[in-house]
Length: 226
Image (tube, rainbow, N blue to C red):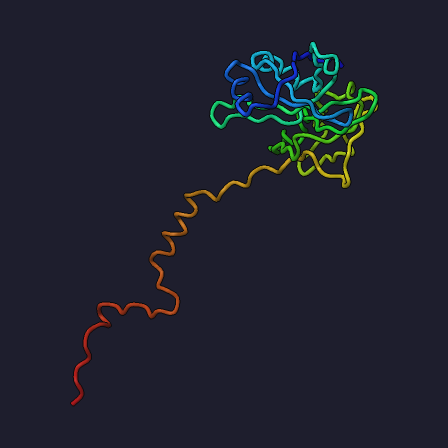
């Protein structure tokens, strides 16, 4: 896998206002941590990081470039980003250092391809998961896991065990959970006209348990008994 390069430099952690100064100057405070060494506070260019974000999202792996020998050449993945509530600008980044020779677990997006057979019968393709957790070497992290839904008919379900993984990429799961299905067509509501006809039919009928109204002739008062 081709890695994406990102420039960085070590930063001070004091005084307290150093983070605000970095942000005012267009930088982003960040930290590099992992099992290969102690956490290292760094700063990166906000503009460069924004330009690399799309590629980093696809490739998942970043190679740091720095004048500091203990940072230069390190491979990291984006672990967490903090953003502003308005605008979504990145204000802090956490990078996790990885060993290229050791497998790690990451979440990889699913990419659904093909046209499900059940769509011909009016079915609706319903993804149940958008990503899967896999274990592999850092340089083998796939951009996405393709899921061919072509054979799925209405009510069919595809489970994670049926997915195809390339190379040494292994799915991680305890139970064989479903990832996509084809739902049956939506049941149409009863025609409004039929409902209206039933309402008209019932409108003239007496209420249940009520006596029928007397006719006009029968309603005449009986003559008094002598």
